[in-house]
Length: 469
Image (cartoon, rainbow, N blue to C red; front, side, top):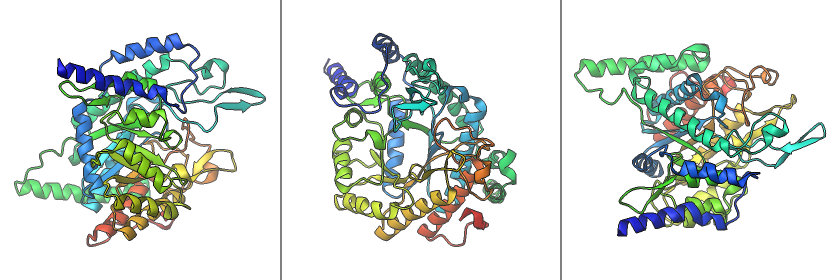
């Protein structure tokens, strides 16, 4: 009876105390009765992820915070229902697996693999409305809220889309679990991840040589009678921005026999730059759940802000609980980051520091396309490493927007995308993503930085060509 009372109280607090706080970036749902009906159905639905999985990731993130592992987190800027396909999901997973191989080889540290997948269907926006040709309509907020088509019907927020978000997330998770445990992620198949357009790129060729080296090493281990058990599966987690609080609260569950509540929509959730108000609803909600939590930090973030986040989200100072994702931009990261890292180190807090080199480097091309320059992305990563090297702290990893497809959304890279190429395959639902070859470019350059940091002998295979610098 006591346990049931505790569980009920934990669930009530996690699901409800945020409602008395200002909630930024929430849709203006026109029919509250429809919203309540959808939320009620979701509250009875099976969880998408389980408490034990969340706790496993929390332990992995504790290793990142201690400098014993590296986080690789990536995926779509905004998932769409139309792209919940085997090809799309497999492509993103393959890209992340390839990047993880490159990083593991260089850093000699475990790589914690987390996809921006199975829930990234909603996006915060800088404006509530959009105008085209004198017509003003609500802005597109992601497939979980409304449609991208510029019509009044499509842009009307529809609570039924929350149910579709749940269903598409479940389909994505089912496929990810099948792929990562059913042989697709077998390290002995590293060559098969390098097919298609990426294989002929400079980074694809470098990867092929690395794959051959791994293959020889595995053959040697087999010949010596050493076990290769565990190489046929991959540990993989999913994450998204915990933006839509009605959805997150509806999927909050209390683990039986404990008083710990979990947001079961994803293993790791993050709070965005636009919703991290210390007195706001998002901070209140995520302070009540036990998942690993991340917070995005923009260039205006001060030491008092990070201390406030620490007190609200990680008062017990548990390594693995809190990840701070810096998105300051290439021009600001070297100025902003040192004060934040030094402040938390002085407090004895062990958080994971992660670099998001995408959001602070968005520009508009002459064609009108939103884009990012690969050299600016890499400059922010370099600045992130330089700060941690100077302070003696651990650069915990990266959080990037990427796809496994041959899109032309970001300019630059070893297999260079030029500004005049942007219109060829500009397919993102919101912000520009690195394509598969650019993602591998990033992985190889990041691998060099970890190799330098750990002092491992010898250069990374085949240093990148000038366009990647």
